[in-house]
Every structure is written in C-alpha cells, then in structure tokens.
Image (cartoon, rainbow, N blue to C red):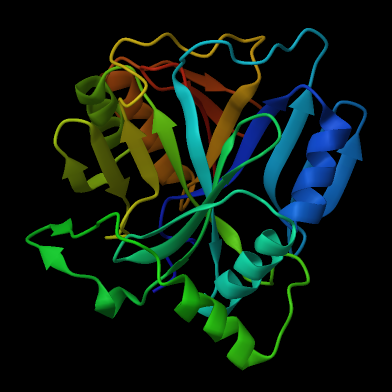
Length: 283
C-alpha cells in the first residue's frame, strides 16, 4: 500500500524559516539532492519529480534558536528502496557529513542536520508485511543499523548517487511539543490520526491507515517549553494532504471542537497545534 497518496492523509511538504537562503538552498540541492523547483527573492521551493517537498523562506530579522522551543525535531524524507538508502549513505560519507543511524524495525534510517540545525531523517520502509504488531500498536525500536547491508544493496545495484531518486516523498514529520496529552488530543481527536505506538509518556507516533507514523511527537526538549517565536529560524509550517474537500471540512469541525482555531486561506486551511506548530491543510 502507498501510505503517501490519497485517500491517506499524509505530510506533503515542510516549510522552514531560514537565515541564509543561498547557503541553505545549496545544501539541500548538493548534499540532500533535491531539485530546485522555483525561486523567488525570499523563497526557494525544492523537491523531486517537480513536486515541492521543502520550502525555504527568509525574512529580515530572523534569528537563530538560542534556547529550547517547540517545533521541528526532524522532517523525514522517504526513499523508494534500500539500494537508494545505500547510495545516499555512501554519498554523505564521501562528503564527510556527520551521521546518526538506526534500525526502527519498520524502517532503516539515517540522521543529520542542515547548516542551521534543522534535523533531517532519510529512510526507507520495510514492506508492510514485515512489520510486527502488538495488538493495534506497531513495534518500533532504536536498534543499530546494518550499514554494511545497506551499502551492499547499493553496490549490488551498480548505481551511484545522482540526487534524490524518482518516487521520493516526505515520509513524516517529528515535532517537539510542550504537552503530550494536549498534543495527542489535537492530533488524534482533531486531525483524526491514530496512535500507532507510544513511548512511556515521552513520545507518541501517529499515522493514518495503519502507517507506522506520519506524525511523531515528543517532550524531549522539556514539558511546557515555549512555542518557536515568529522571528526565530526553524519550522515555519508543514502541510497535510487530505483526500477531498468533505474530509477537510470534517477535520476543520473536529479541530474547532477541540478548541483549535482554523483560518481559511485562498488555497488551504491553517491551524496551529497546542505547542504552536503551524499546519496547512490541502486537498
């Protein structure tokens, strides 16, 4: 099953507030391998196959993060296969990029940060049939990555890295929040995501249609942390793609019922989670 196309509700793009637009554009193009889809004076849109996955926006007066805020833990780029993960791993290693890695049972993942400290995960999913379930919750772990096996998959294919491959999508977003029960109510009752797994009152993973997670939430930055200020660099917004207008109307009603504000823009609805993370709802 494809968990990143309709009728599934999925994260379609992420918008970052950045301080140095040329430097960040270069990083996402040359290191991460996105194509530049459009450029404006204060904004660059990047993605794959002509589809925007990441929007970088700058404004005079943006400042770097100087304390712990709610906001982005990482956004996660999903590759179509293990060999593609191997190609990325070799490419990043050749560039001398510092990497973390993990086997989450449902997926294999690499972790790094961009020049302004935004977290990035690049991963591949195991087949749905390989996932292990405990009732309604999917089993996930933080095990060591079989990096050798990942690299071998790329070497056996005899291919070298040439940017993000066709079929790459925004897999999920993982957020720092200030209050996990409040966030759970917003994301489960308001947006309609299902809890896929929870980690001891510290983190929650929610998905639609049994995906291991489209949304990750954690309080690892501290409970009660402030929202990211408007003029501080970091997460600007992320976008959710919904099946159709009727579903979006229903979601908007549910969001209002849990006390969230919903603002109608020309092309999307906008809401804000209890930690101050901005979400755009598209159809």
